[in-house]
Length: 260
Image (cartoon, rainbow, N blue to C red):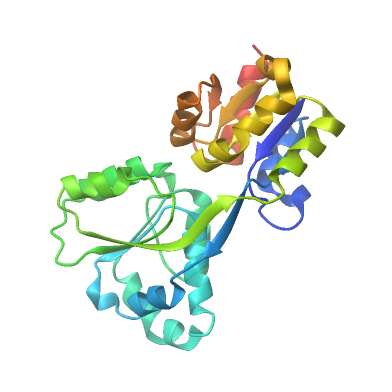
């Protein structure tokens, strides 16, 4: 059974991507195609804000890319980070969505909470449940295509938030040629997995063209509820939504739908 994953690889070597590894260990032929490209922006502004932890109550990271932006702006400022800034931020609340994001935050030397929340909506519920009286905003480095669920939910509960766009998301320049090459060589896969609403937006029309009438044979899956919503909005039937955004949960969900 062939499974096509529409996501960035964990590293340059596709074979060591944890999703590819997990699916391969269960007997699937997993292919992976990157669908998004990212440009980092406002890094000087981000470092200026990170340099003044006294102005914030904490940090929120809802994507690995936002943490990568922090790593980039700290590249030339490691001494200040290690000697004082890191400890000052560690005295505050650091919130994350997902294990991948949590692992990158840990690499910065920061302790975080919320990694099992699964999506921004559930993370917002976690933050609001603390019922803290905030005297300053939480800093939220984010992407250009962020959804408004988290800011809206926090605003409703009077949790002050300061958003800063630190990366722009665009369609990967090779997406059409990569998909065409995959369908030509591998044929129509048993399942296609989307990992973001942006991936749905940028890929779906190409998949519809390449699979033609055989699109009905494909069981579409997603990494989480937000992506599933985007798929449904485009008229797709979602056969499987991973219970949590992990390789194991996705693989178990795919096994269930393909054993029916």
